Amino acid sequence: MNALVIDTNVFMSALIKKGLTRELLTNLKMNFLFPEYEFEELQKYKQLIKKKSGYNEKEFYIILLRLLKYVRIIPADVIIDFYKPAFEIIGNIDNKDVVFIATALAFNCGIWSDDKHFKMQNEIKVYTTNDVKSLKWYK
Image (cartoon, rainbow, N blue to C red; front, side, top):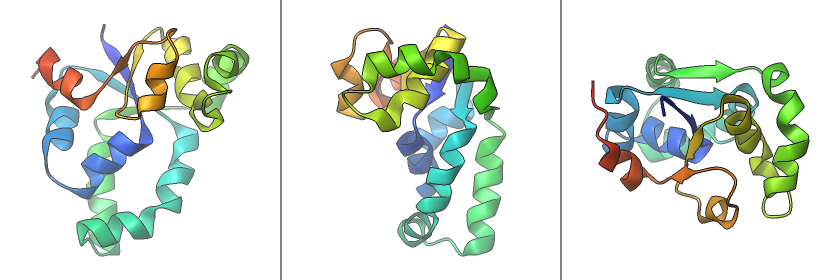
């Protein structure tokens, strides 16, 4: 495995504080994939992220841009053909996560997420932060 789709909550965790999640994101020999659609979620929670992190507007964007160097943004048109099978896998569990399953299907890879509902499906391998840490694919 050389790629993982990164869940928005994992990315937000790395954005909020310097800790294990950020260390893994920036130090693993891994291609991290992030659906472009999820930028809307980041924007939606920007004020909360700034409040939790203590960043001002400029600091928020500096850290965001630094972290984006470690992820590959996946355009919606690349994964659109995988939405239907992705919806069949997770749509009845949480339809907000269809985009992550579709990305994982498109790239034949797993997902890095600490959300337990991803474990309610068995088509896509899901790695928690502790799982990713145990992989030890450091640069």
